[in-house]
Length: 187
Image: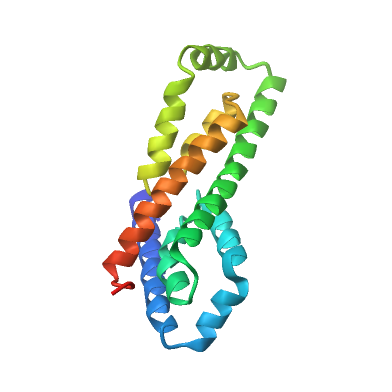
């Protein structure tokens, strides 16, 4: 399968999941079983779903697509969006851990490029952090694309955590409200 076909297949898969989530949300208005299942797992279930979706480099399944289902099942929108942002941030730190592990392996091998990268980090520390915020807040692709290299470069956990959490909160609120508005759940 070509790279182009692979991208289209992923796109179709994500679109299918989003449509399925919206159909489940509509069904939840009439199905006591679906509402009970969502309420049984509640915000804890939303967190774990978001954490798994947060580390989504292979198959991006956005947890935000399930917001209509969660809201129609009886969960409140504000805590749901916050829990999705927390869960996604937790998942992003699997990527952070991978970046740190890669750094440790590179240090063991005394790679010269690591010294160059560290000098670059020293000179331009905050540019990548700012880029990470805007990326995680506005781009619907995996944050690990930036989180893993920044961890590899030795960026501090607290700087990455605060930045990704803030970006994920912005993304969750914007996407969640747009999703709910588009499908008239509050109508």
